Amino acid sequence: MQVIARQIHVFDLGCGMQSCALARLLAKSKQASVVTRTLYIRHVPDDVAERLERLANRAGVPLSTFALQELSETARRADNAALLQALPSATIDPGAILEALRQCRTER
Image 1 (spheres, one colour):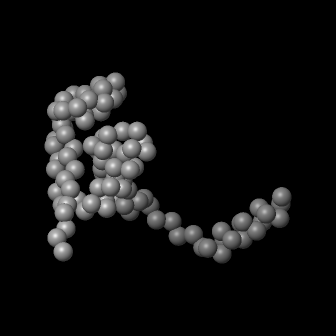
Image 2: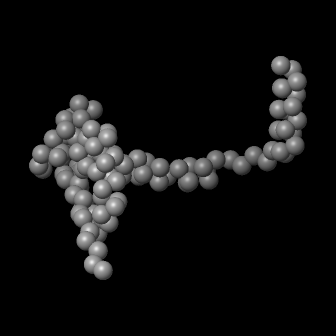
Image 3: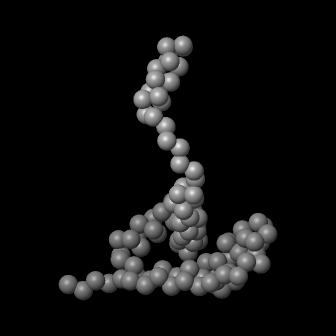
C-alpha cells in the first residue's frame, strides 16, 4: 500500500496570500522587523494534515498561520524543563503539608 503524504508550507512574511494576515498582525505588534525563515514540513500524513486543516478552519485562520501559532507555542515551552530544574529544591515533609491542610479545614 502506498502512503500519499501532504506538505504543509509555512511561508516567509510577504510571500503569498497566506501570510498577509500574519504580516498585518506582526506589524501591529511591532514585530515586523523580525527576520523570518521558511519551513517546509514534508511527509505529513493525510490524517495529521486533515486534523490541522480542521483546527485551522475552526480557529478561522489559514493553515500556515495555525501551524505557525502551534510551532511558536511549542518552541516557547521548550525551555520550561530547564527553568524548573534551575529552581531551588526545597525538601518539605508531605506529612507536614497534610497536617497544615487538616488544620486549615478544621478552622473553617
